Image (cartoon, rainbow, N blue to C red):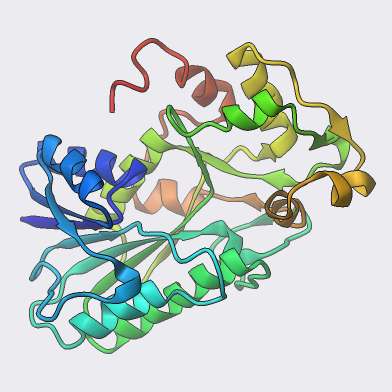
Length: 295
């Protein structure tokens, strides 16, 4: 079985390792020769393509195979032309594959702290969420036109060894005080790898799954726990009213949204048992000896 991973970086290389262990032939699509060399060292066949410029003529997805689409959209605008370029190139391909697309829980927009599941209508507000919503709709149109099977994962904030905001902590940048901070949701990368492979194997065609550990907290709680574990000073906390003048535009966009994600459908239909069901267990594991080297 051939597996193609489009965007074979932090998450993709971990999923690739799982697929290689299962005996799959794995190809990874990356942008740079340096990234291609890294894939080769890991036993992954590299494909160097710049999705912004389009794909080479004759490019095809693995016939009847598996495709994980992890490539992020561009950093500007409210559409994802990278997905558009891919789908326009492979339109009408015979023996269509099965695609797992990595979206974001940001497509739900601000939910005023309410618990939500997959029946919540999307209402993306930030450009970063609008780009993902655009990609979701493009993939759905591809599926409806007979392109292949599709599973969409709406993923919460990813953390794990090698993906922790330690530099922000070292800079001592402020956070909104705990009592005013909105709810946020997270998933450990090891659990996300399990969800991705389970979605490919067991996810319902056309289905959407929220991916989180099911224990929402706040960004302030996350950074405070992380600072304590890393032996760094806790960030100063400021009132929400002072945020506009003290926080980056990117951070403010997250603080304007609050929601608590139900992961019951993911657990039930994908048969997932989380290794790290909360930050309480997941963050300390990031600092265990060999945690980063394990990947």
